[in-house]
Length: 175
Image 1: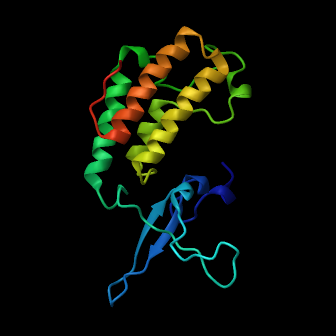
Image 2 (image 1 turned 30 degrees about the vertical axis):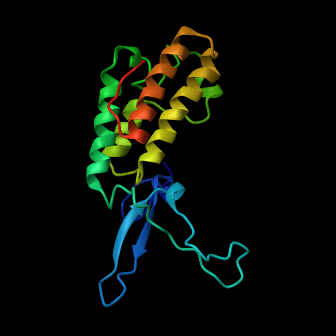
């Protein structure tokens, strides 16, 4: 990793998130947190044409920082998915010896160990972001193997169950 691509404070890649300073307001002190750039939203009333209004970050009610127990729920779902027998090819990074040409044909590799590591580093701020990465696992599988392949069918079963459990707050169950 190029040193210019590292956040000088955290030494993490800049694409892993940005630091946001939250104003305390009303005499309260400001606080900072690290957010994924994908989770920044414009506040209501934001002028998207840029006529004098600045963009600010808004935290969702479902944010992990506001509800740490929600992050624990999502981690439990990801761990359950990783233990399922159909997830065996979805856990670790795909290597060229297992899938020749995968790294050339799949621009955004995704697998459960990476999602788990990101959860442990507080990379994600919302459950939806985790569910989106789980969806990438399935898309990559179909892109490389074809939609009708047995591995893609198994992948669909595991990723659908994972996304459902994350988004609907149910237990992980492959159908």
